[in-house]
Amino acid sequence: MPGPSLPQKLYSLGCRLSDLGANIAGHPLALVGVILFCGAWFLLPLGESATAVLTLVLSVLAITLTQMVLNQQKRHETALHLKIDELIHAMRGARDEVMGIEHKSEEELEALRITGDRAEEVLAKRRSKAITSRAD
Image 1 (cartoon, rainbow, N blue to C red):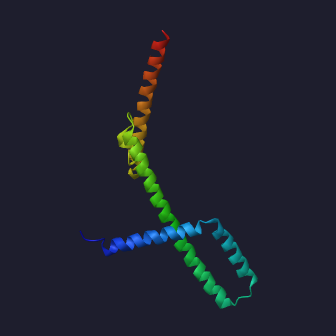
Image 2: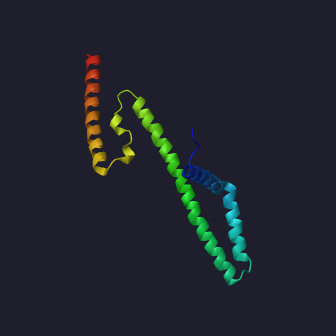
Image 3: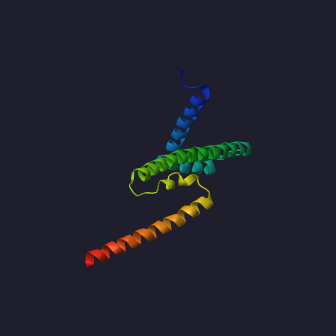
């Protein structure tokens, strides 16, 4: 059986690096480090060229870090959707057409909402009939 291809290896490496970067940046000590760094940047007499280079480097790091965090959030969101879909599928009486709802268009979402409202009305009528028949 052949091993993973080069694009798969690169994707896996990118995911690991993205996770590592997002986890490091999300650590509380990272915030302390950023505050100390910015304080030192403003207090130290750097030349104009050094300040320009530092600004460029920090801008690139900010964009890269944002992408790392968004990538991590996307994977976490996908995992949550899969878990919710599994719960919907496993529940008796749940509407299976709601699984994968995050990929549906606005029109499809509205149609599902309308059918869900109708189903709730039917259930409410059944419950009220069951309650009144028990009271008799």
